[in-house]
Length: 391
Image (cartoon, rainbow, N blue to C red; front, side, top):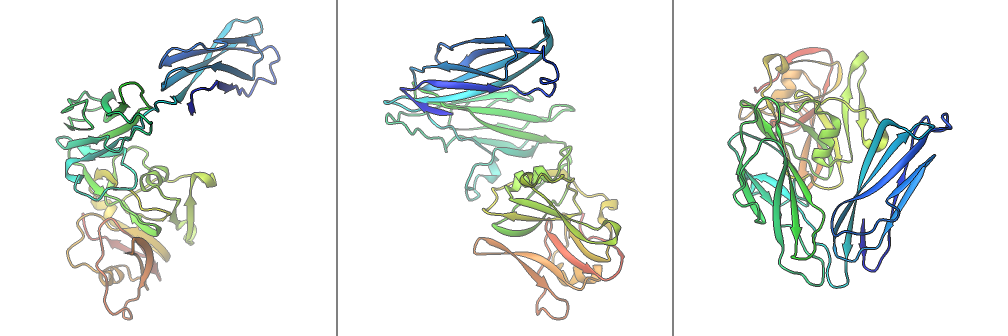
């Protein structure tokens, strides 16, 4: 929430409890408290006890800064004694003044090797890397929209994970070396705080996932339009599934091809569809629809095992992926011959957009090269066992 002085700010909490209606004697006590920012008077700081369903607190800010508050609800029994059940939520309010505004922090994370790539429309905030990689944190996209437009001051704060040493925690751009991931904690999280000497905005988060030794990091990219995507390794992140891949690509929706029962059908996934997600495996391809180009992204994992290279396809449509290490010169003609497929549908990028093309053996003049980490839609006339090329 963002407001400008002069203003009176109302903080509203709605309480939902499935057994509230059934238990007429149940009560709540709500306590409002300020966690950060210039001190303000909250009115009222305490609400209840009583059969509350909503609680409201108000304050009048006087200083441009980030204000953070907590609302904590405590469940009480019919005589007002705590039951031991509590829940808390935080609310952040950015306050601007006529003479100044809170700066906007924008943080991104990459390896130093990725620095030379073309910038994405939005910075990457999550990254996977192995021990020893030099990691770059950048707040260069931060800005100060206020009339004062003072020089920005940067502060990087590590909030979780194995402790690392930043080259300069007070610079717009800083670096560190990814440590040994150890056996338990494999995630390192930072927050970037930006201020102009008088006002501070909301922090911007970034996160690094440390990969085990022997893991590989492969790029996963997609473009506006319809894409056939895949992951060229077996993902190491526990529970890596449709939601994680969709978020990584910033896709509108994903779909996998389900061939159970001898029939092929696309199973879509999108949070807006309330659809059930699915696990992402290395040997499957996925259909992804995007409105804008995905940012530079990658997935870490281990090379496919010999068993994962073995696939039984068909009959009917099959959506497969190719692993890392596809031999040089391997074409869609070779893939069609290996799988006995009548055709191969593949993705092609032109003019910054992705479109699907069809390779027809014996008809298409030249067979395009097959690529690692890409998805391919096949039409297999009868069941066939194959060993996919690569490793």
